[in-house]
Length: 128
Picture 1 (tube, helix red, strand yellow):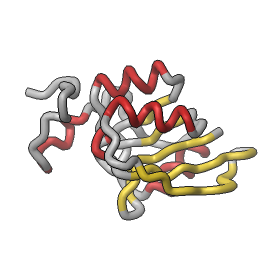
Picture 2 (cartoon, one colour; picture 1 turned 180 degrees about the horizontal axis):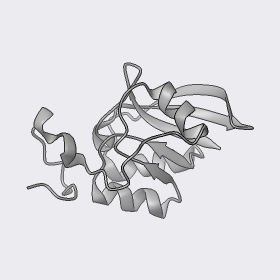
Picture 3 (cartoon, one colour; picture 1 turned 90 degrees about the horizontal axis):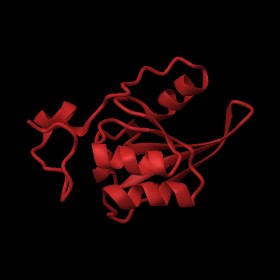
Picture 4 (cartoon, helix red, strand yellow; picture 1 turned 60 degrees about the horizontal axis):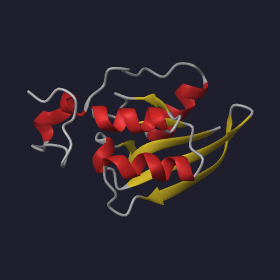
């Protein structure tokens, strides 16, 4: 199993489409064996799913995420745990122990009051 977390300063970054890095966790026997940081080099929404697929990620933990990105992840066969915040390492530990609290309906507009954006060229779910 390989888990990716949108990552900034040890925390789950809150906008999938704007993440500058992922922390990747290699998992064996329900334990973290290796972690690495992968820079996205400014890639946008659609390209991020391809990056994750190419490095063998099968699970993503993130904050907010738009509808287009959700579809791209689904097409890549990557399981999504959205609406997560706080410490990235703790989120992975909670996922492995079955205790992760996440929101399957998380969209990038749940935190929109922190920054005004339109999610690039794509619409992010339900901007109002």
